[in-house]
Amino acid sequence: MTQTQTELPARMVIGFLQRWTVFIACVIVWQVVTGLVQDPYFPTPVAIVETMYDLWFSGPASHLFLTDLAVDNILPSLGRLLSGWAVGGVLGIGFGIAFGRSRVALDYVEPLISFGRALPAVALLPVFLVLFKLGTPVQLATIVFGVVWPVLLNTIHGAQSVDQVQVETARAFGLPRMRWIFGIVLPAALPKIFSGLRISLSLSLVLMVISELVGATDGIGYQFQVAMQGFDLTIIWAWIVLLGILGNLLNWIFLGFERWVLAWHRGARPDEE
Amino acid sequence: MLDVTNLRHTFGSGASAHTAIDGVSFRVERGELVCIVGPSGCGKSTLLRAVAGLITPTEGEISLHGQRVLGTVPDDLAVVFQDYSRSLYPWLTAGGNVELPLRHRPLSSAQRRERVRDALSAVGLDGAAKRHPWQLSGGMQQRVAIARALACRPLLLLMDEPFASVDAQTRFELEDLLLEVCREHESTVLLVTHDIDESVYLGDRVLVLTSSPATLVADLPVGLPARRHQITTRASEEFVSLRAEVARVLQAGGHADRSGVTDPEVAQRWLRSEAQEAAAPTNRYLRGP
Image 1 (cartoon, chains in turn blue, cyan):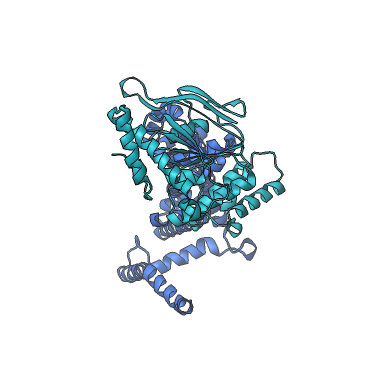
Image 2: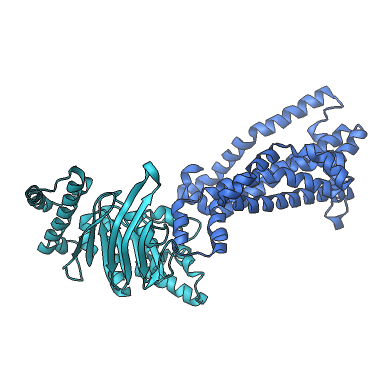
């Protein structure tokens, strides 16, 4: 025990270095190379960070130092991403549980599902643009359509894989229908549902940017368009770095949440990790 | 209390049809612990599942307390399966597992908590309510499954090879635990096992089933005292002669089935040699020739 305690800080430092050395080295190399070459298409990381600060964090203290640009674009984008993901997730889980537990229903809808999942959500953008004009409904429709499939398929698979003994135990104890669905099927399918939700989360970031590139009047994707028209590559790079940070942050938060919800699963099946 | 009349069950149809149970009738009285013993795969689990209402038998009648059971799970029934690692829900704690079947019963949450606590303490798991099944040993997990069944205060407790997946030491402990809690709760139990010794040790009566299709070949009352002891009971004359009797019936039934021996003299010779061997502590009669 004492040994672990004394070693813990050292192990943390080593772990941090192992994880980040290559990343930091790459940034340094990039800084050195771009500093030497002075190519306007490839600004230095330092310049990008300066631009990021100027663009978003030089605001008044009353706005938590956020600029209007940040508030008016990053927040709507995040809102669309998260609400689209949530709606797609709820739809996918709901229908997935139903189809996963009803062989007959699944037989009817299976061709529809395999057709729908094969369609790139981006291909439907023109349809959504005509339907909803510019704005949030376009982004929501695109994200929901894109993220529903991984969640749906994973949930179906999870709901189908409830152990036969668990099924019979629930029947033998006469569990009512609602408790059977929410108390047994849903938790049994949760590990699969979470892997679907994780795929969907990164997918919704992509779909958010793409749909805003063509169909929005604000948001991160829209700002790409603005910066592109102004030929300001440092600003474009700043938004790119922001997307990278957002993607990592969302994934990181999601993993923490998953770890917390599925603690029982990691304990029950430690060899699967 | 439980009446099974002329039960038949056939899986599939046509040429691939397989009759698992063929005309089984018996009765279990209130407060009895009845063991069904038979070789592995003889259809005894199918019989139990039919009684539990998990499958609808092809023919025959099952009634529990006068209420017909045919493919619908009767109320006031609890089942303990062999595979505790799969019948306990890993996302629930031990206490949560025990509580689950109580949650749709008309009980206040205080009553429910009390029942969970009582059931867990009856199986000797007082401190384990907040632990998850995977944090418990196999024997403890099966105790949780037994506690879950007991907490329902079932009219009839069905047990499908409940101790077949634990080690010998734990098995003895759990057998004694079952006898003790059954005495306390005055439970009625129908227990399926492939182990002759276990059936005699636990049962008030032993029903002997022969191989597929299952037919009932003997209904033997167990004349052992109500309080049993793993060492002295198993060494007693009554126990030894009973287990020999069960083994003999199983062997004779299985033998006649397979080779069509019906000659009484041949059968007698079989029985004699089996009786001598049966005194040795082994279950090999069940594996068949």
